[in-house]
Image 1: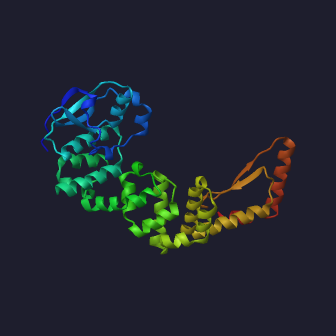
Image 2: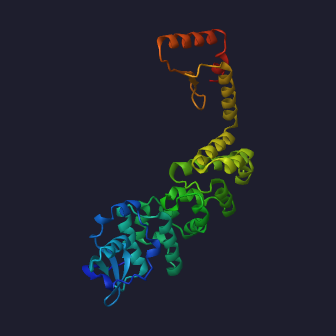
Image 3: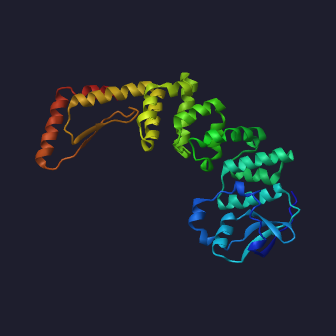
Length: 323
């Protein structure tokens, strides 16, 4: 791309065409930028001259809004020439957003998909785009229209249980591997949880392992009695933890059985409520951890005597057998 230079100018607010939404659809209003909007109102926005004396916004919608709210008459702007293509301008805008770390990756992919369809271009053959996408951790061999199309086709389903604008490419790639009908089932399983980051990745990883290693489809998981009970009765703020725990139980049935056995043995011990006994969650350590909370020497002596009696009578033997 041979981009022409832009000019720094002071533009009349009335000269900006606010009805031109060519770029507004792909504007991400970052929470951080919204909180500190006053710091950005004097940063030049990006405009393109559509015709003499008339401009469209390329980037800086938030700055424009705040200047408008202040009832100011002019705004500083980098003005791009009218002969630059939409792709040229998009590359300028994306470059700015990558520097600011203020972008929605799924919106970038959606726009690039639209541009490649309209202009019949190959993304990784445009050097500026290739470099920018690599900065977003999208390797050249993954910069394909087919993969981007697969992601966008699943956008509506993905939105049902994630925070789409916060998803990394790794997470989008992970989601793109699921067929649309499976994503529909995932939407039912994880609806409204607004997952992202480690919570999303760990959940999907367990589901993939259940599919590949245990032959359990997402449909099978949905039909699980305990999962159904969680979906119907558990409140939203506790639902993720409950679903994750049940998925882990299905993924590690032996571990789940060991935990049930452990809970049963602990109950049979009838320990003082100020004494807790725990082990490694995966029963991999070769020791027990005992915590004692005492409010007096007398209480401590009683607790220690009780532990000694239970140890001498072999009541701790079953617990040690599990580790």
